[in-house]
Length: 549
Image (cartoon, rainbow, N blue to C red; front, side, top):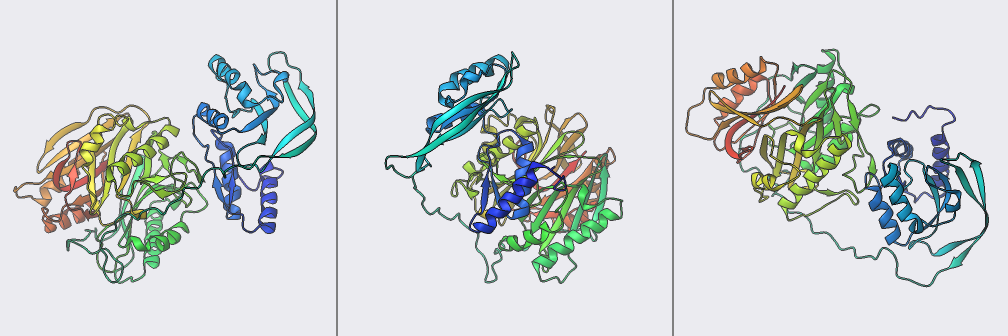
């Protein structure tokens, strides 16, 4: 991360310049940068933008460089080289366009990995014309200057001594405007107070007090919420975060150590206010990943927080620039946290178009699932992982959405063999999305999914070196269930270093007294989910418990 206190850093010059710009042109809202692969550049621009209240735009971020170069040529961007500093580039190339030199760049890339967009500093350009320009720039007098006459990689610059601008023929605005009002996604029915009307009286089961458990280098905190009787969602999330901080403090940890937050709200229409209050607790240090859903919570409970906590340093991928890569995380939550053992905990992904941050495929839940998985792939690729390395997934589906998750996952070629997953129906998701995907993946290729039978339940596990993720599921049947026996089965797994982190139950088939007994026995938050499904086979279940190890 960039330290704003660094004296003499060029970023501080940029800060001063943009501050002057904002004072003179208060209508300015964003800054666009051309970072393709440079995290160094992106982080510094994001830092300046955050300090000035500006939006960072990085639409080229993580795009393939050959694709970026080709699009510039196809879009008639007339950019000429003004500096060369790479093996294979000659001073004679100064003043020539990227269109002229595109074949040369591609040859150099094949020979020794040359960055065709100059991302490694191989060359610099100045743009003389593009479809956005009202007038084009004409260079009247230039001089080539040799800076370093190194035989294999000479460094030379083009000194522009004189220029003028030239009128362009009238043309249609670019890009053409075809904006239409997007159809609003279907929303679940709500009562007079704005809350989603419940189709079941079942609510989330909580342990009596927040719980703290450990597994190796990870800790899990479950059930942080406001005291009974809290009537304000903002106070509710503040109280939940304060409770989380208190529980962590009792074990020598702080909010800085949190790697993932499961944020559950009683009413998604309150999300803006809840998110703003949440942000105040996670600023100023590496952000945790996060998933947010609506669920049926007890009366007076507006927010519930559970967390995965890392005892060792972790790597955080937090891109705050709007791009075409994956949805931006503007608030203090990251796209991915990579734990010390290189387990990737990916934030919940919905089908936002990254460039516009507008929900895509409003009426097509299957297409939303596909796009959410594509976002997961983009995020994992930055961590040198991939969808095929997923060891567990939670797929949240908004009530009323029509989607066969198992069938859609089976068709996804980049996912490969689906990992253990659970399909959880919730009243609503952020932005009115139909689907949200939460994923845990590993850096190395995981093993096959192992299925085993235990008393009263079926157990799925997919493991890799140092980490495994499991789902315990009680299948839907008429068989009587003993809560103590089921809890004992899970506790037996926990005794081998695995910890129950969360749970879900189907209110139509599960015995609520059993759910409450398991919640208290294991110290778990267990949320209602009508039509609960678990995979990779995609079978109906009464209760599903998520375990980490």
